[in-house]
Length: 346
Ligand code: NAD
Image (cartoon, rainbow, N blue to C red):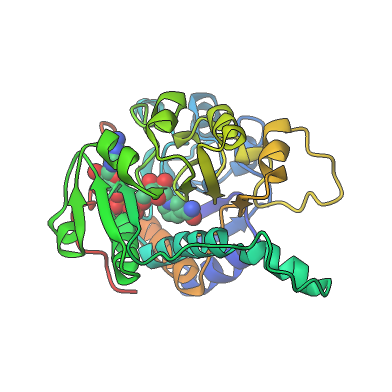
């Protein structure tokens, strides 16, 4: 098939070209993000391949359908950026990469926790300037602390294991509790109890209408004063304005973000020569106790390779049978189809 690959970065080109080396598919690499205005670039293609900040709302899908596109292969687990109803009505099948490396995301999440706690990002800058003073770098032992994990699917379970390994007590909340998470050391409690009892709260649930702004003013008020909040899942799980208020009041003591509500216009690009017009982002960045990374939690060699292999497998399956290997169902509330399974080994 001829496939328009949107939001291509050099590492996508390398990994996808490698995975598609048998030549079954002709991959057309495009740097543009997919949206209503760029969808026409898929002219002559039967499929598009899209990433997390591509826009597959109804108006974009309509342009794709007019251009004979019949399949959207997502290079992501999340599919909150796709209007599934419109896709079904327009006859565009959708498939995703349900798991590539839960370890990559869980390990990055742990890296944020450790760096925020021991202020590694600040220490790095100090030492470079020959400032060896320790004032302001005081951390705490993770051992014995309580960690709350919201969402115990593939990534959440890996994170439970890592934090249990540090000697933390791990509380969990998930509407679909998992035996694997329990076996890894998690104790399920209601969300309110988790928020009230945790020193660290980490989000690992999908973005759905039900989880939009899951962390808002009210829930922040339930949290322990000085709590560490980490979000490596999807930006809109967190109400940014509420979190800024929480940081200003000291209710939130540390914030680690790999995702941001308005990341689509920022992340994955080098904007170092530009003025960012997003005041909330700049406010967040100005707090010394906030550490932001630009949606890089997935970014390991193993994960990139697995994403490419599954994407090509989805394209192969669609070409053979009109449905991807990992189709996204229209009525799927969120990516939790394999949420209760043991994470696959890398
Ligand atoms: P998963 O489907 O295996 O697990 C999600 C879990 O969340 C499921 O157990 C589900 O029951 C639970 N859940 C659903 N609604 C919930 C709610 N209201 N409250 C609590 N839990 C709820 O997904 P996963 O592979 O573990 O990925 C989790 C999320 O991580 C994805 O949805 C995606 O948004 C994000 N992600 C981020 C990156 C990154 O690079 N930062 C990479 C991959 C995935």
